[in-house]
Image: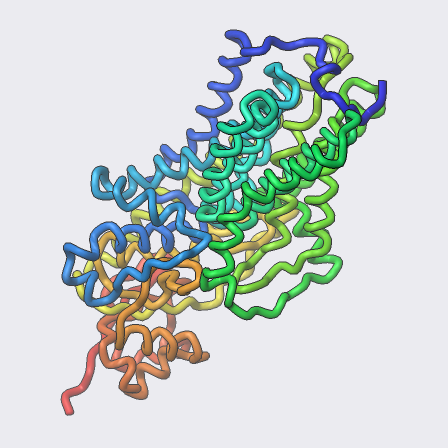
Length: 523
């Protein structure tokens, strides 16, 4: 039997069309374990998440809150990252902010897994345990950096592509309408997710043509239908701010690209992350070499395109960071869903299944152990910022940290990932969420977020961003800094010579943050 199968449905020998009690029990158990870390702290330690939540909080309440309206105003436009901004603010008005936030994160966590199951089901007509292996890659560097719109778009792309594969030939009109709406939803979610969707259905169409004799007119008709699906997103991109935004690409060197390839498995312990990557590759090679499974042609095509894009694309472009890594994360989500078991011996299947559960359990144990330490650190930080009142203006600065433990011998702290990425950089967003105070670093890029900072706070943000020493700027009495009421220092407690503390009155401090009140001399 060939390793690449032109007709995946003909290669499946086991598995029920709708799954059985054992399959559903395993899926439910895995999903519950994925959600378990969200119970350990009300603000999960995802790098960009507090900043996103702060923006969503403003959008939910700015119309009724004069304090928030002093700082910000909505700036609605055609933007490819509006999914959270459109869906979450109504939820925040109905539920406590941190409850609503974790519900949204939980849904986003599960979308790639459910998408992998749906894609596999559409290809084969059967349920299988193989796509459940996608849970290994859920707590990856992209999620832990807080790229929530992107993670959601990966799952949605798989779901919409599954609709195309399953229903394109049986109910073409309804399918075209559904996936056209899905393409618009993906545009609003994340552009790379839209591209992922295009790759999936494009690969399926190429495999469909390859597998049967078709007239040229039929091929042109299917191409035209595909163009219709993406017509509205193409128009939206052309008229969006992002479509007109300049931006020079920034590329990685070879060593950095090799490290970026680990994005799907990076969390908190580098040896375990490397072992996970090695085991996944080894199992795939073993199963393919022994002819225990096959990969359908559309899966091969899609994976090849994703890997080429990862290798060729820059890591930064048009204010988007880690652009290339998005495609290796997509490949990791797709790979388990596109591998189809054919003649897997029972003993080998049992061994692989138990090994997978052990590896997944260990990885989730590491995540939960690290996240458990986050709750007391959050409590300590909240105690530091407790004196801040609504309407205060807080300048936040970060001091250099001490030497971090070796990534090869120690589990990383909750404040950094195993690749060294610091993930508590946006924690001061709690000043806005819980105290309705202003701080300079809310995400408000016009081409990416539907919010605008009012003057004079926008000018103050620009001066802070461009200054190598905002404390010195404050000390010199720069007019733009006249509204600052407090300084929040992130990092070790500053000594007399570490920052210019003249005019700063110490208020509260903990191991990782210190709050100062700005004391101005009467003129």
